[in-house]
Image (tube, rainbow, N blue to C red):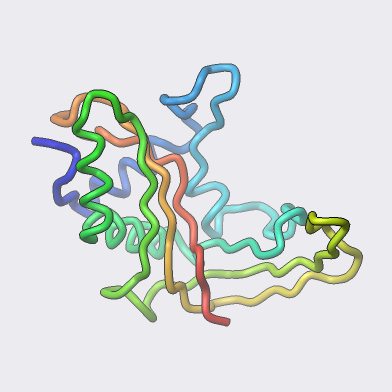
Length: 169
């Protein structure tokens, strides 16, 4: 059985949980960042205003929203095609970016829009209050996934991150 298969909702939740704070397996140890889908992109994040260097930062309203988004991304035709690339020996990671369809309108996010200023060609944080929106509809998601173990194992994928990409305010 390859990586491009149907995962149960429980398997997806377990992979997210087991990937949390585990160093990314495909990066050199000195530069590997820990998995952070739950701690940085759900309601469990301590401070939604802590990333002022990003113009718009979104977190899923709940862990359930994260799991549902990951499920649709993994089972979508685009997701299955990306997961199929992991079956090759030379490929160790993939990125899935999809527009939601089955769960469109059901998955919610909280969004922080930070004030930015253009300095030369760069956008930098500006002074002023951030705009905070709660419970907005998520239209698309991005997942970054790495191979972890043989595809027959229980949790063969390391889910580095999953986050809302396009939201409707």
